[in-house]
Length: 209
Figure: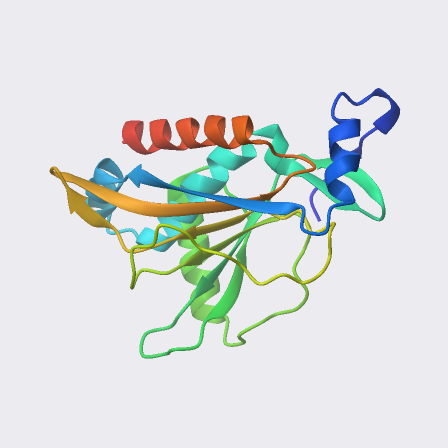
């Protein structure tokens, strides 16, 4: 598990908001929006990189830069992780059942894609054990362009792992558009934080080389 620090709730500016939503029956909420991935597709096609591996890395890189996305509940306390790793669903060719693959974050896209390729190839199990608390979870649905997506609910109000989904991309006015969704825990993430993350992510997609 990645390193983390325990938050002193008595001196944390978000303590009241955290406690209010922590007691909610359904404290997670989701927002769907579109991303322009024209530049991303150009870059990864030139490099021969997997879309899934590349997109998971870029989203995780941006989410790690947003402090609010790294808060979790851990053993009854609020903690802030230094780094969040990745977990994504993946279907092997010819399969219709997905497996959940965990890959640590890397310092570069090239390193991450290589590590993801090796992990996916080596893993035969569908599930390798309980999910860690220091993960971003991803699930791609490249067969359909959605405007909204919902998730199964475990009943655990302190499950604060952000969930990211994407759908089938399509062309509009000469640009390639990707449906994208993020689900977060309201104890830690408000709408303004999702907006900042969305702006950061789009800028990263536009500027990558």
